[in-house]
Each structure stands twice: as C-alpha cells, then as structure tokens.
Image 1 (cartoon, rainbow, N blue to C red):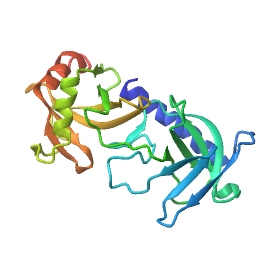
Image 2: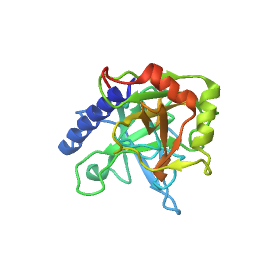
Image 3: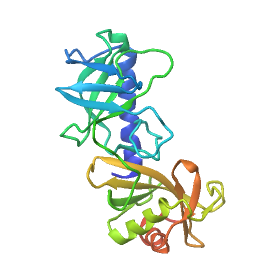
Image 4: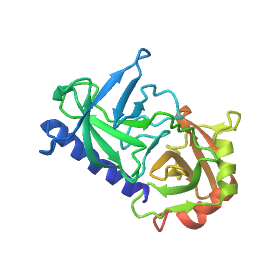
Length: 253
C-alpha cells in the first residue's frame, strides 16, 4: 500500500473511532470486559484470556510502538490500520473511563492490540498500541526489516519497494550510526522533493516504521531524516539511483 493510501486509511479509521467515541457507543454489542491493572512502577498491564499486554508511555524512545495516529513517525505503527473491536477494558466497569479494544489488521495472533477511549472526555484523549509482554520492537535494523518502500508525497507519483538485503543493510547501518554525517533540514529548499521511507517489519509484516526523505533531482542527491533527532544524512548512491529511475514523480517535475 502506498503512503498516500495508508494515510487515507489512517484518516478513515480515526474518523470512525472519533465518531464512536463522541457518541459513547459500543455498536450495540455486549463486548467482554477486561481488567486493566497498574503496577508499582506505574506501568499498566491488561490481561486478555490470561495473556498479559503492556503499553508504553515514554515517547522519548524509538524502539517501541507507542501511538497510532496518522502523523506518527519514528515508531512502529500498523501498516493497514486497525480491525474489529474485540472488547472493552478499564480499571472498573465505568464506561466513561473504559477503553475499547481493537485488533491490528493482519495480526491474527493478536500479538498487538489497540485501544481508544470508549467515551468522550476532555484532555488526553488518544489511542494506544499494546503488545504481549516479552515482545520487543527494536529500532529498524537489517535483522528486522524485510523491505523498504519509498513513496512520493504527491498522489500522482510512483512508489517503489526495495528488497535487496545488501542495500537495506547499508542504509540501516547509516541510519543507526550516531557518527554518520548529517546535514540541515532540506524541506524548504527550492527544487527538493519530499517522500516517505517506509520500513516493513520482517517478523511482524503488519507493522511499519516511517521516516522521511528529500531528493534533489538535478544533483541526484538523497537525504533521509534520522529519527526524532530531526537530522538528515546522505543515503547511499544506489538509493538515489533507485529513486531517479523508478520512484519520482509526476511528469514534468
């Protein structure tokens, strides 16, 4: 799925969830209720059929899945959105403080789940990704990324998916290298074209990790944004070649 299509899925799903949240509605179904507990270290755990799930609150780390919103970057998020509602959870049966529980599309084993407030309230309303305890999601590395897609921002552009292991390993080595040479933000430079770099998880193909790229057609130079640091590093020349030959952009650019 292209970046544009993925964004449309995100918008549609979130719009539906917000409408349901505002109405305080549970679609007329009597969903099972699951207890959510707070531990001594203030972490939260949710037990579903005896399986513990946890969710992360610290947004400063890159290695875990935190939120599911359209503009989230630098974290693992659902590639195809969320699926059916399977239950409700909370500290008690008070519906106003409960969370609706949803599947992640494509995750038939329910390794990850998604929650959204069941009722409307002011302040702090947001969705969360939960994962089975013992499951880790490290920052993208050659061992965990099966392929990488590059998608231009414009609707009429063409995206490409790279599966070459050597190319992926070379790029991710730079991405994870704290000593990689970085440059300033190119978003406002005239003639530079923006796109998304979408990394697909090898073990959890229903998850993706998204960052951004910028490309200068005249110089055939490609830069990638390095996580939450907001720094940019030059991608290997073979990636710029892929973009120049296969990806961009609308004709005439």
